[in-house]
Length: 436
View (cartoon, rainbow, N blue to C red):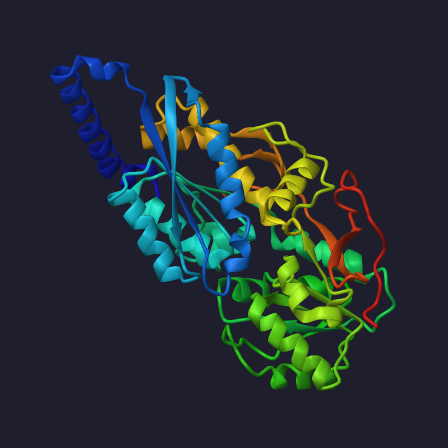
């Protein structure tokens, strides 16, 4: 991962581009007056089991395109911006494949990617190999950073990356947020853990650095029945284990279809804990709407909401205005990725504007590394305090609070923020309630 190992292919790519530009100038001086185009590739799970993460893509991309319609002023003059979208189909192999297509065939200068390690990790890895700058989000930093190390279990061997950067929260934040919600209610502190056999599940369920040791330190006991395969159709074994442990609390990191299956079967089999705090699966209105009334008071982490007190550096919108604009344009409730997909392009545009030469991958990567920006999801700054230096070089943490879905009389759901101890600047909307 060292800079020296990447310098040969990167310099070769830049040299060939420079040669082509010189040739064009020699053949057609009038071309000097033409505005060059920066190409941004965006990899996203628009289809498959992770498609809920991409629900806001069309809205955000159109808004960004409209904002940049008259070109973008950079240190080297105006450039046009073209956004090329590729669907990962919720498949890690496909994500890596389309990332390579964007680099080799589409010749993008920058890739942005979001939505779970199954999407962010293969794309980031491909960019690091090819020496192309990449900005990612919507995956906890541990699976994004640690799972890409040669020796994930030995922090002394971890190395920073040269071209890939990530902003989001970490497992330490979700653990604190969940415990902040749980401590508001009287429980037996017995927790059932739902961890799939994927990058997220293995990171969250890691007995050394995941949820189990952190929950134990907080006085909780976790029952972990072991890893299951995504898109399982039978969770009886997990439900029986949680019943046997008399678990008042269920937690885990689950894709939306699996949460629907698990929670429906749990209700059918007479298992109803006081608390169910589930990451990933119930971030979105569509997921809880599919469950109906039995989803009332399910709780989850809240990365972003209409009440977050942040403003876009791209167009000046507040979080409330961005969320309202999405609902007005789509007729749908706002969804958390609206803010983070928007912020991806905020960081991308800001980095392009500041880069000494945005067509040079090294210069653009250096501009990303120097990001110090207030965005719609909060402040993003790489190299800041709060993480080990080797991690902080590539990772910027964003705020996290906790919320519950409240069933409304009209059949819709409202996400109410009920825990904000780490970020009191984000207003509460209520207090934690037990599942009835």
